[in-house]
Amino acid sequence: MGIIIWLVVGGVVGWLASIVMRTDAQQGILLNIVVGIVGAFIGGLLIGGGSINNAITLYSFLVSLLGAIILLAVVNLVRRGSVR
Image 1 (cartoon, rainbow, N blue to C red):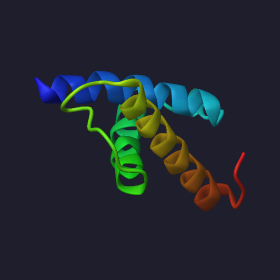
Image 2 (image 1 turned 180 degrees about the vertical axis):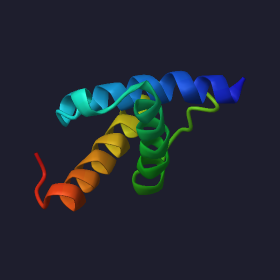
Image 3 (image 1 turned 90 degrees about the horizontal axis):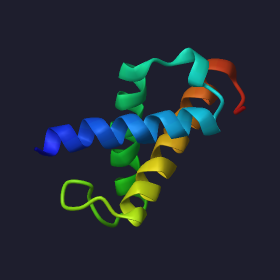
Image 4 (image 1 turned 45 degrees about the vertical axis):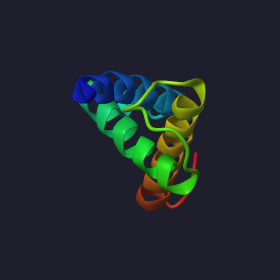
């Protein structure tokens, strides 16, 4: 059941982060899921807090979103030399 939660929450978080960072036109659903899951991992490492495995709370969702935004900012910085 945990993998389904990862995929759904990862897709939503990755999609929202791509809208915030204006990379939505470049990404598909698969990349949104990857960005969301990796972003949740990065956010958990940097900020700490609850895991989306135990419960989906507003705090864990925001931590995941912040991690995904950080991930997209770093990718934009590496690819283009500037953050959009």
